[in-house]
Length: 308
Image (cartoon, one colour):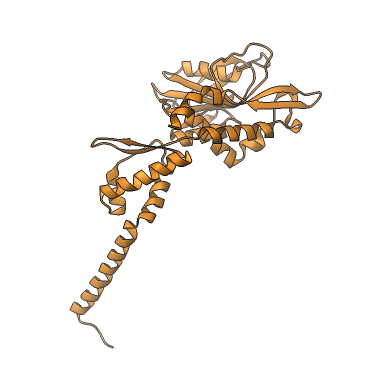
């Protein structure tokens, strides 16, 4: 059996290692590879400051090359209205991806949802509307999340709040794009929640007194809270969540709902944003008419700024 001398074995091993290292370096410095991986990394971490040194070390490339790559990503995001790539100067600076949606895409999506909502088969007893199929569709939830997150891109949102159960997927989508936690208010306490804070509230549509609870550990002191929900009529549930927020040392940032229904009396909540408005609900005649809510109107100036 032929055995190579130790020096020869070392030389062969070293040569193989050098070849693999050089091959790896060649792959890492390819701009196309960097752009794909860099874009994926940023999209998965919205509202997160990423130092340039991180990308430089990740791809073993000069900061000047990384800056050029980020300029390409920034330009593409702006052209496609995917979001804003914000640059933070200074030694502790870097880049931050802020998800947004363009006015045209927002209007098109809301119009599509209004058309799909204008189906008499969606009518439920009590003037409510069936939303489960829409709020169970990932593509729809992603757009809802982008819409609401765009409105609050400059706000200090530290947590997204909703009430169980239909509002949970909306809260999760919004929280994902804002990169903050979401908390769930429940009408029945769970032993796994630990100690809770509870409030009684009046249902706006039925005038019944009900109770909702939230774990004491859910919100940090001084946090900014965004309330979201799937459907609002009289505003009793949303008003209950506002009362619950007052029990914590936190501040309300805003209220957003997927759809608002027609309500004969006075709503308990006046300052809110809705993507859709259910104008007419006739349970006997099975007539329903849906139209865009006040979202586009309330964010008209914001969309103008984003289009600059």
